[in-house]
Amino acid sequence: MMLETETTKKKQKHFAKIAILGGGSPYCADFLSGVLRNPEALRGSEIILMDINAERLELVYTISSHLFKHAGINITLKRTTNLEEALSDASFVLITFRTGGLNASIQDEKIPPRYGVIGHDAIGPGGFFYALRTVPVLAGIAAEVEKLAPKAFVLNYTTPSNIIIEAIAQYSGIRVIGLSRNFIHETTLMSYEAGLATDEELQLYPRTIGVNHATWTTALWHNGTDILPQILKWSERIIAQKREMTADNYQQLMHALLATNYGAIPSYDLHYYYFPEIVLDFQARRATTPSEDLLKLFNEAATHYKSEVHKEVPQLLKLVNDNGLANFALSVIQSILDDLGNEWVLNVPNHGAVNFLDDEHVVEIPCRVDARGATPLTQSDGGLAMDQRGLITALADYEGAAARAALWGDRKSAIKALTANPLVHSYSKAEKLYEALAAVHRDYLPERILS
Image (cartoon, rainbow, N blue to C red):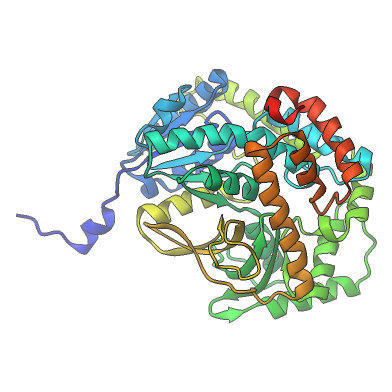
């Protein structure tokens, strides 16, 4: 009888079924590319792609199947347009779809600036309507997960993550984790720009606190040393150069200014709240919105897939700049599946981890990720000053109101929730924004919030 050794233990993998909702998207293709680069992470598992767009689904599935076969990967790949089939007995559910697609997001970016408010598909009025379109759909999916896969971990990539997760937590008892991408981008980017690291596998441990799209990193450890002071010195040097703001550098300069003035690293989108007039000015100058650029990229991806689909060894290009989110999702799954106990910054219900926010609100903070899921690490006030906490508290309360309006509200409660958004803060302006955006998104909104 062969004795079990440490080597054989390490080679063993727990079986998992990973359902990807939005399986025909380039984001899903990126995730599968990550699996191809790290096949041992999910060895012996099953990935099932689900999408309501059968043509896109077939393209991604066929190309990925060829690549998995060519690489000899021990992972079963399936596809379906049936939600119940995808969810049944799933271990993980990865949500990557956009209700209304990119065309809806384009309206979220274009309409608010007409009323003097920043246009964005994840924050402000645009993010609010993204939530109104998406929360009712995800509430239905959450109910199916409770029924068909009650032990599953739901990993949400769809924005605005905090509103969506708070709504799901209010509506159901499923285990949901929000994937945050911005902290990876900003802390790593500023570390590179400050000349502190060049290693692509740089391991950083941030003390990050806030809500999705609005966090501060008040410490950043690398190899046991807090490198935040060095990043702050780099920021001071950038400001001292007194560069003229351009479309190419204005965001970097605003981040450096915030870091210098507040002594912490701001998340990528935090400048929208501190410099709205500058952002609006640059938004007015741009020829296309980010979602228009992304739509063009997605169309190019579809064309590329069609040209590759019949090849024995097709090329599954990484065509989406998602700041490593595909690899991040895979890492989180692996941390849970193999009980690794890694630390990641994620979006989870507060439950007392942040002392100045209500327990039911969703926070973006470091979490220990193991077989139990994502356990938030207590941050207290995270080293934030009162003025920093004020914006975060206002955003968290707005997100809670938005989640409830999206789940159960009517037109009046939705307008009141939008008024609470720090980028709006005007009932009359909220009414005008609401009417304009509700008109273009009518087909994706429940009747109760239209009248």
